[in-house]
Length: 119
Image (cartoon, rainbow, N blue to C red; front, side, top):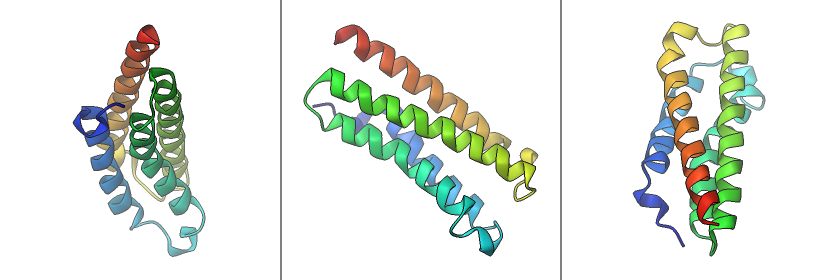
């Protein structure tokens, strides 16, 4: 088992979720079951999969869930770009969120590399 609560990538992804929920609160109400739901689920999936992987027994299992978390954060980034295209969000206003996503992507990739080499 891995103590995911000590991982900076988990802590940062929790904070990212908070930023995402605040951002999407300003989206059109008719998107409540569409893009808002998709974006929020993708953001929550990142720390959730880090935690689930951390609770598994082997490095191989941990790496699998880190990979799922990485996929979710890439999905989230794409959805935010769609939001900008649809004019639900202004890129200048979400640029810091996109920057944080990029950093979390790098952290996940590095962690995957580390544990793949140990597996």
